[in-house]
Image 1 (spheres, rainbow over the protein chains, first blue to last red):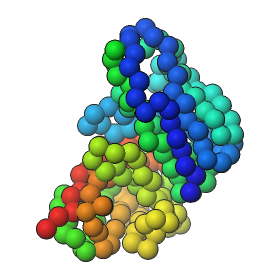
Image 2 (image 1 turned 45 degrees about the vertical axis):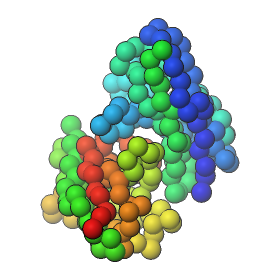
Image 3 (image 1 turned 120 degrees about the vertical axis):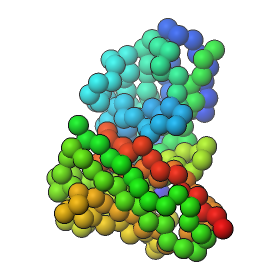
Image 4 (image 1 turned 30 degrees about the horizontal axis):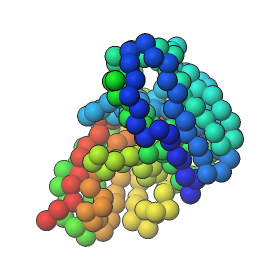
Length: 107
Length: 115
């Protein structure tokens, strides 16, 4: 299986901050990397697919980059509704696997 | 607008079979891939597998011997069966549309494995 490792596991930031979450794959996954946001008691929400593509309706402050094994999710200016847990997921090879999550908390 | 709704027992006894159904509205089962993903309480996400309306499936090898995903096009539903469950199968089970990444999810249904 391809292992996905996110860093950091948790992050405290303030409204207006620019933050970056990193996801590393245990082997190359080309650009087949997706990002989700999950709030307590809710299903995950797709933010970005295939590394850089913004899902319809997702604010443009979210962006993704990377290729191969190293990927990043950037939130340009944190808004109160962005405090949540974020997961990366590889769709290069089954079994598809997710990172362990990054919990973004208010400082 | 696609809506997905999971249904099934919330409590299953150890060694028995977990059975869930996902009903799709706003999209035809015959037009997409359909997936199951689970999340143990307080933990991360685990991909279970997917099915195409034709019946073609792909399962997580960690569950492959116990899992069956099927589709009922007449009811616009797809289903998950997981046999010989243990406490480790206690999780929130989500259904989702598509194969590789998931823009549409059900709300999730909690299944607890316990006597």
